[in-house]
Amino acid sequence: MDTTITSDIPDFTRRWINLADPRLGAVVVSASDEFFAPKERLIAAETPVFIPGKYDDHGKWMDGWETRRKRSSGHDHCVMKLGLVGVLKGIDIDTRHFTGNFPPAAMLEAALCDGMPDAATRWVRLTAPISLLGNRQHFVAIDNPHSWSHVRLNIYPDGGVARLRVYGQVSCDWAPRPTTQIYDLIALENGGRLVACNDAHFGSPNNLLAPGHALNMGDGWETRRRREPGNDWAIIALGHPGVISKIEVDTAHFKGNYPDRCEIQAAWVAGGTEQSIISQSLFWPTLLAEQTLGMDAMHVYTEAVHPLGPITHIRFNIFPDGGVSRLRLWGQMSMEPPA
Image (cartoon, rainbow, N blue to C red):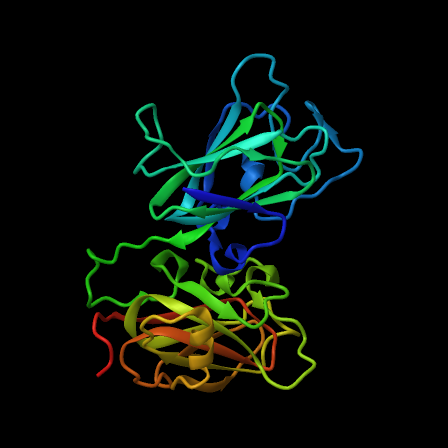
């Protein structure tokens, strides 16, 4: 177990997804106490806010989870079911707006279980005790190869935490799945993941792979306004190698800021660093030639999909910039690289 804490925003927050996102199905299942602020706020998708002068029946309204002042031995804790089972890469313990009421320390544990954790559940410590400060984010890298379904945040002895983000790689078991069926091979729940992108100013490309329909523009991938030649792009690894037969590009909610066109390149990639994959992707063959996009619309392509055979990665190019809410690549699994 190797953990490090940093005040800078680390790469794991950009490369991996927040498995404790309620939009993926994450839920807070229990807490030792939630007198001042309910446990559900701990994983809210929105950035925590502070509202001066707002009080409720228990005192000052706080955007997070806050326990009462402990007058006995022990410490408080909160248990969360992750939206998707995965290998954890890092966490963000966010105490924003908690100043005189934050916990002095915290520690994260994890478990893997089918149902609700109980007295027999084996919890594994993923971090050493972490010293916390008020009104700041605490990024902690995690080096542990195992998959987990639940996490438990322990705070010492009491206090308030605005948000907990749990970044990781989705674990997906493809073994029992029929190879003849069609799957969205880049869906988050199927193990699809972002490798790299050139810009994510208004929204991460990971949102492209999220389940369901986008809630709003903030729930998609949107780049800044490009003021120089070129185009924006994102490289995505499939959850399983496969042969693509249908592609969906959804610009829902993007009206004055959708891309003019899009294109998809693809290849079978065996190994390589992030930088080498970025360089290689410039020369990948075309899976979907440039297509004109419209505002706030679903674009479905079948006949336009080029028969490249099995692939593992795609490069999604948008011209010149803008926002896309969802991207789906439907196809069959393949275990063999192209001949």
